[in-house]
Length: 508
Image 1 (cartoon, rainbow, N blue to C red):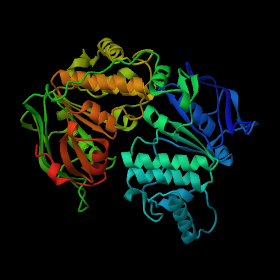
Image 2 (cartoon, helix red, strand yellow; image 1 turned 90 degrees about the horizontal axis):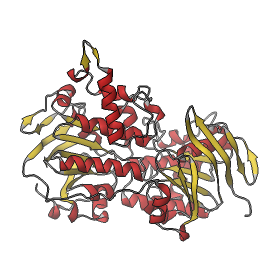
Image 3 (tube, rainbow, N blue to C red; image 1 turned 45 degrees about the vertical axis):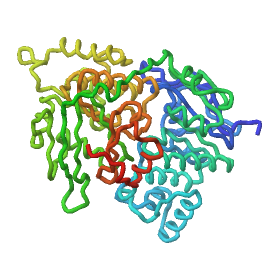
Image 4 (cartoon, helix red, strand yellow; image 1 turned 90 degrees about the vertical axis):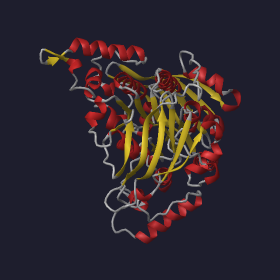
């Protein structure tokens, strides 16, 4: 084909003073997997949202098969057979798989048996182990993602945009997803794959677009590049190599001790069942597993947001099981939540106000009965500088920052306020290499200060890079606790999927 399937030509998009995209031009061909790389805030998602109709471009045009088209809404995009699977799924948990897929797409009297059979046949065709009659709330996160893909296939989409699609999957599920992408593209369809994982790019992509500061900085074939060259194109400044002293630096002193922790609602299956482990000072203790297997509930129970049914939580020998959230903050517990929009920040507030939120009751900010705005401004400026946050200043509104910079603000606030124990729950989800490196460096610095750190992550590379020991979670239970040096990707992937090897389980 001499004409591209879809093409973005000279696309520009402005948000007030921020340039999100500037003169962006690239195309995707039929049968091609195009990877879109770039740091957080580089403009990748913005130009894809323009192609999908969630945003309207201020300048430029979109073409299909060489002819200009107008996409003002997702409905327009669907008419041109474009579908987008975003990081945060848009599924109704109380509805079945079939109900979610046909929602808004079927009119009049519905033949449920026919629709269920049609969707089941579609799932079977692509090797998706999903029951069309099951409710979304009963599915794993990996299965929910397959439902999102089935929604696109049901609408007969032939351009599929996938935004960070492997963030919540096990290694085995990632392999299955990559196989689907290859199969789908070979049928004459196209895939645009947004990711920061260079290994995945080199595995599945035919061609790679590199974006930086809202512009295209590279357009290369996979066979003509490598991971080192791509990382140099992505990042304006070189990434510092992190040195993480494992094991030798761990203190003999236990800082956090979790004993037989159980959490359940009414008479339902426990969300957490008999969880026990210790975290030493100067130790990074990992919690691995597919999302939805009790990791969030563990974090919420430790920070006081979720009531425990039995068991105890000790910090420095003190039982804090009955402490309120405020009590736990005052005694120095830090918590970087997995969902920064829902739990970490108020997006309509300024950065300074978000820094104040966590300790608004503290005497630190009081001056003659009012808030000491100068002290708050100075503290915010210090965090912006120390954590390399790209923002005009303390008065900047949180929602105007990229996701990576929002995360740096949250990490900075929690690190500055915490005492001996800090929880990091999915701290680098959806971030680019530069932002990930910044967060990792912060975690290692806290370890070197002698703090006890609990790191929850679905990224195995993150677990292996940072953690001294790791507990693998499956359906609210610990499959085993291991030194990271005793694990590999295959072994940890099987444990995450529920295969338990009692012989190798560590009793400590």
